[in-house]
Image (tube, rainbow, N blue to C red):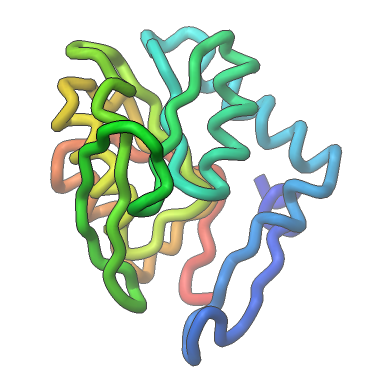
Amino acid sequence: MESIKSKIRTVPNWPKEGIMFRDITTLLKDKEGFNFMIDKLVERYKNMDIDVVAGIESRGFILGSVLAHRLNLGFVPIRKKGKLPAETVSEEYELEYGKDVIEIHKDAISEGQNVLLMDDLIATGGTSLAACNLIKKLGGNVVECSLIVDLPTLKGRKKVEDAGYKVFNLVEFEGE
């Protein structure tokens, strides 16, 4: 997994002072790294009972839609407030640098569907937990929260796991 980690750029002090932003766009543009990452995720999930992949705006859209395609599944977007055109369900959450709201279409997940949640990174866990709550509100079962990067120092993974959800990540940036 070091080959994946080495392709992730760190942007200091973005979006605000003191934050070390882990930017996966450098991984996405690298064809070997991107394909290796997707292959690893396909290998993990190909035999699991998953009905649909949900991705969190915006990098989760890229990762989740490619993974859904490779697993021959549908894809559900989870977006920032006001971006979805039909009736939605929303959830407010805290970021490490503020608050935000995400939404999902009310008809995106059916009762009892098994959902794989995809995003690029887990920091404080607020976004992932909010997305899990949205899926649960619609009657879905979160099979796992799948991420590329975990920032263990911020304890987001623990927060999501303590709420009863499984979390998987490919790489960590601990205190770096």
